[in-house]
Image (cartoon, rainbow, N blue to C red; front, side, top):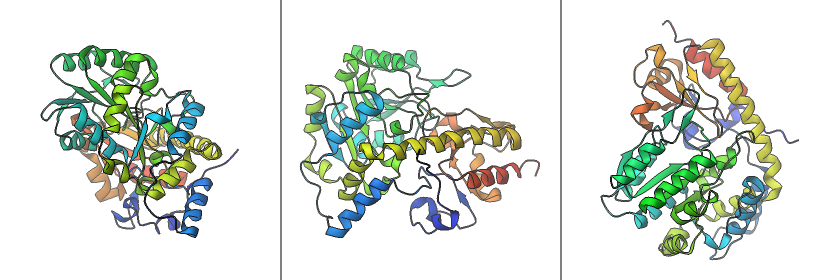
Length: 384
């Protein structure tokens, strides 16, 4: 059993990525979605081999990535994805924008489901469309898609939906039944579903994960998935994602994208993604999931003991915690005070939509020591 543990803080501070350069050294950075673990051994070896032989040129027109991802999807999700219906690009955001540009017309409305990853609002606008908000439903124990609200939005003229699956920031793994129902609704109205599945490899085994395109014929007709190894394997800076389709009609949309969309794929990103999705990296990913499982439960225990006013539900997937601090009376954006006075950087809740007022998003893809100190620093503000 492979153990995946976070690097020491002193070593992490040598990094030059956004997480470790945005704030001064006295701040614990738990905001952006970067993790604090070393690279998976297969990825490190692949990148070193490339450096040794100077393999830093253009991405080839034919690569092993589609087949490797198809095998990964079969092993991890039980999904038979067709590698012939995949095309790479620089990252998930670029894939989303390029697809939305071709399945919507300027000024048409695209559904998003707040609280949701803040760039979704900007990506819809970049594609020339307008945002239609249909918030997630809070069931009291979790969150789910508001299928009635989505149907009403499509009936009123929305032409596409940007799905977050698993959902960021709540960590919700949408059920197969819910996704299949969503696909049927979209099919009824001739709408497209673009599914961001970047967090899919991080779904806990107890929760499972259902790819949108694997939920039936309707999903295949209306759906586009955009996937990447970048969140699970911490490869965001290397630039590689895959756009996945399942029918001739949707595949023709992706095949019709300009060649430059594919050429923007990073060579190191592609090499790293092939290594990440290979079977040899499965033990590392399993070890990471065990570490994140421990951390998500530890965070619940820490909050219960030191900050009982906080409301937190253990996420099904990922390493991002959605925490409601409204009861503390720290305003709509409590992360501002936390950053200034506790020296802990969290993602601002309101950036995820109006539903994020009073909330913060915390990245627990770190060491138990950093996670514990962060909660202790925040708890020390109570009563001040």
